[in-house]
Image (tube, rainbow, N blue to C red; front, side, top):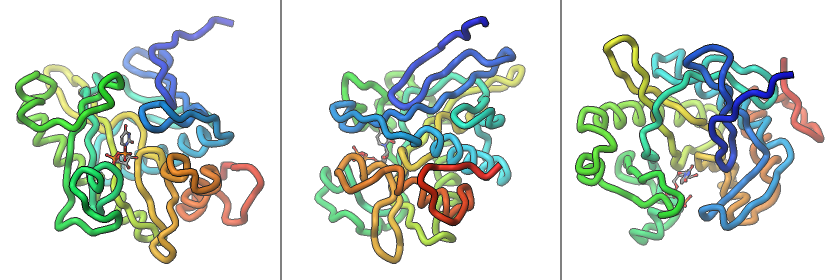
Length: 251
Ligand code: UDP
């Protein structure tokens, strides 16, 4: 059997060459890392859950007209995605203070922000993904002013969608990170949401109890990460309602 070509391996996913030009296969690993990969573990079932959750969010975004790289899920751990040129920025949207903004500005975790705040970090693990401003982005040519305006519009639409979907199942969207890519349709370039949207890249707090249902469970040793992600999946109807010992997919 021919071995397929690995394009890129990151901390939580692998990208393989896709079956047609312009496509890639995105494989979700069970590996979890935090603090710039200083803390590492393999968490059985995480990749399966994130594959399915990212499919759920990307499909919903597509249905409301937000373009994404998602084409279709292939199996438990893989999805077919459109190849794009990733802009080397993490776009973070915050509704409530937590994590680095709390540390940086001394705002108590859980404080509602006056409005959603969009931040950019430059994607470079060796530098620890530093926070950058639009001035840096324009000066170093990572994106144009038009790209930045489009990225903020996309990020705010994703925020409104995710906040609403989560609110409906009793979960508060504290913050999240997305990555954005460029695709070319003939002479036109447009931006699409790429990478993944999952509890690895969001902060999700149960509204009733404040319980954390995201990667902070791993970062801060708060219990079972699979249980937390399974709870999110169950509430969203991605997993059966009755608890199972192992994540099991509905169809
Ligand atoms: N985030 C992420 N990848 C990163 C950095 C942050 O997915 O490399 C997400 C993180 O899970 C949270 C949001 O972006 O939902 C804001 O993260 P923050 O800046 O507070 O950083 P952290 O406290 O995670 O270092």
